[in-house]
Image (cartoon, rainbow, N blue to C red; front, side, top):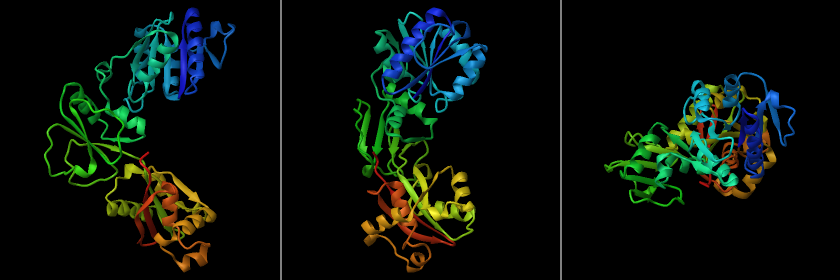
Length: 360
């Protein structure tokens, strides 16, 4: 995590230096020290940037450039500095505030998703200070849904429901989590953990429902919160000159065929001789998906190991040197131990296959 540590006074500079050193030595963070230009001649260890511009202007730059900001100054100052730049919890950096004597370390913004709570606890532990964490789930020792998602690298859909689910957890309302993946969280008195196979959209649940799955269906009721793994890859084969629209039609049709959510797709994949196909590249960009390209040797190795479950085309082998593209590319994109959940399907000038990788 890239973190800016900002000080405004001489005493604060010394505390900021100590804090930046603590963060860097943890091995989990890269800390950069920002100090007023008038203190630039002080002997200070570590990476530092003397600033001479107004603090309000600097803060805007830090908000955009860093995942975390540690402010050695009064909380009121930080509130005024941050206010113009706050967007939402999915975009805002973690903001931690501490006094220049190092007595209190406050998680001020983006406590869960941005990891400010975690950051405040780390700093307080290293300085023997008092961590000030006010998020309700933490105060009551209860799990928070966005922390569960972040720890596993899952996307949240729709994010606005997180507040309602966490409110139910804190207020004693019933929350049922149906998951396709094993969960290592401790169930609370009002939180039930169930296997996804037990879930039925037709059954009316009492309380909030959270589904940990890459599946999608029109029958999922409104108000359902989804935690989506990024464990799908779609392999693409295409004729030269296939358009972005043709590729997108194939991708969306493959997802509909498999009943999977596009937000769970990690990447599109193809052979590297297609790396200049504008339609494929544009489709990936418009869908918000990276496009990975694999060489003949990588694809041939998948065919060698798993050929009994893959399609084979002598025509394709004559043209490009391998007997298939979309299926082995899907497997390579999702991980070699992945399962091919949709074999090669043809959509006009485009072929597509879908592989599902590990949940871990």
